[in-house]
Amino acid sequence: MKFKKLTATLLSVFALSQACYAQDVQVSLNGNIVNFPSQQALIVENRTLIPVRGLFDEMGYSIDWNNDTKVVTLQKDGKTIKLTIGESSYSVNGNELTLDVPAQIINERTMIPLRAISEATGCQVLWDNDKKIATVIDESIVENGGVVINLENDSEVDFLDKYNAITNNFSEKSTQFANETVAIVSDQNNFKTQEQYKEALKKLQIAVSNYRSTITQTKQAINALPDTAKFAKLKTAAIDYIETFEEFALNAENLCNSKITFDEFSTNYNKLGTELALKEAKVNDEMKALAA
Image (cartoon, rainbow, N blue to C red; front, side, top):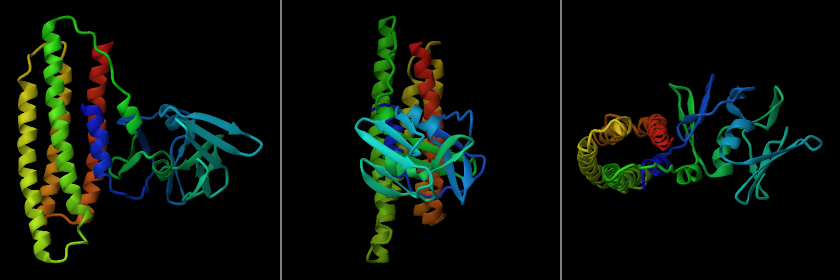
């Protein structure tokens, strides 16, 4: 499991629901900003609306518009999503779901609430209020987004073998840490005594310490890989990506030390999720450049 899968896995574990209230919204899909050339995301009744065209195209959905019934149909891998303009509900494979605000046409573009994407597709949607970025994590794209790199000699093969071994190990340790952290957050209201709660935080503190060691060791291992012009930018992007996980560890540590509340913990993880996805995109770009 390389970095591309790690980001989606961690964000699906860490994702904590928050409402989207913003203007001048940007939308990223797995860390890459989505271009909406004709109609940008906007606010209607305190809800962020985005064009169907653009995001769902990038996600691999076919899009059909029936002008007579005013129904837009999205299809992919056996999933059918139907939205009717002006209706406060939509369907996924025949199952009716409710929209915050009706689907509507603005500047000849069909617009739907951003949060409906999570329900309709199973993607994770994170919100960074400071940067005004909505991050959509589509695991199906991440899973199938590998690239093929032409290697010219044994030393290049050896580099990527070692790089993959390092990142796979880091992915496993990161997912373990995410699960340990979320176990505490999810059970915050289920502890019967204050002592149980304190004991759980002590275990989390130990997990934070161990995870920080993992981060340091991973950076050192990548830095120790041979210095070649071909892989230099990949190494830099990978280390920058890994360093973001220090912020995840710090956020958990601040929770353990009562420096932040659970609400602040949740808000921080949404912000960090956006930063992580954007840095993951840089690693992907360097991989794609190697395959060019």
